[in-house]
Length: 175
Image (cartoon, rainbow, N blue to C red; front, side, top):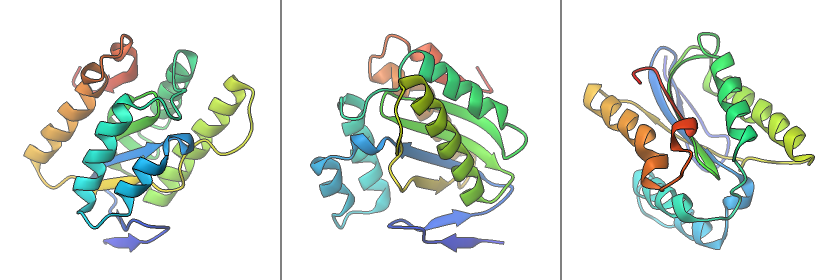
């Protein structure tokens, strides 16, 4: 059963048993440039691409480093086979890409991922408050070619951004 939900600006397709490509970013990474892209009339795919390219070089909200990366990776792996089947994960300095096969409802998966990782990040940083931007971008994976493209995108995202710790930022079941 396909369930479309509209929590905020973007429609989300909730389809258990199917692959989802999800991106979410830190609240502090949302600046006027991202807002401008987010509210233009281009397709969601084009908007997401432009935002991702920008965020790969932006320092705004970039605090996902070191121990935070390791703890988030461990936390996401801890929910594998319970909430989703984790396929690939890339933890960038100010956003996260994840490819998974959905087991539970999307809103529950995202609540667990964003809520739990927020708690971890706040604890490590000694802070309180909102970590993640309210919305997230999700794309239902259409076919095997799309799956491969998404996997490769996630795998090489940190490498393309020239991050020295790219290996620690990526998890993939095929690597």
